[in-house]
Image (cartoon, rainbow, N blue to C red; front, side, top):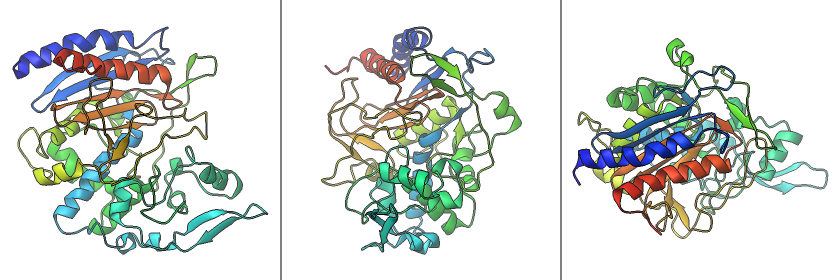
Length: 401
């Protein structure tokens, strides 16, 4: 099957899935979904509305809060600095972000409820930050962090302030995997090395070369006019429009701060499929860097399911429950073939408002599913995304199971 025929087959297979993803069965207000191969976008489709409050229809250029799908872009600029010899993955990270020297390890809480802190036994490095083994967590997924927020004046990471970064480690760096604010700190390393704000670095090194004109930490008037509204699923299963906030962040958080569109993000995914090159052939990363970054870097460690510590924000989350999963440089790696057809070794991750993507380097295919709905890991949303992905692999004749 040649490239054009392959793209036509994918589009024909996934369009009904996207169309069926909104409405009474799922409660999803709207979605934009896209698939790309190494050469071009294979499918870009929409369903539903941007907001239940306005009824405005979804369009391919709808702007989304990207949440944690920001992370791989931060990882990309960090790897560019590694290639240039400006970032040593194994040097103390405090050499690039001096505030890290203040971070201690949380051993628990004493009888009066006060945090028990000590100095870490080893240094946090950029390598730890890239794979979430530094010891940082998120209050939405960790009871101890949530206790710091509710009982001890710790500021939540969503505030995007310097104070929100100053959370203790849960363990000494390198001991285990814990999903959290590591990539926010990686962004601080990028700023410390370059002397620029993270968004400026991304604009010069990623967005401009890839033609990602609708991706930024701050909305332009044009982007704001195309922004999707946020929604919330209530306990009875119904979905309502919720407040859509916008603030100028004190810290441009490498882990969750960008706005983007599906066409823009497909350009980024395609760059990874192309071994680090843009559509025009401009090189952002060396092929060997992409190959190295795409491997498991946890060794014998595995990632674990994320609990729902704040149910209003997240449901319990595990992609492909029960299957072993590892971590590459800012991506999850599924260690076995997934039931959707995604092969072992593929890369993926998510964003808090039920955004999902994957990159299949072997099959040279990638996809992005964008919604704006809380709580995270919404079962109907995840089910629709998995059907979307399975339809892609079904069209290619490679669906597992």
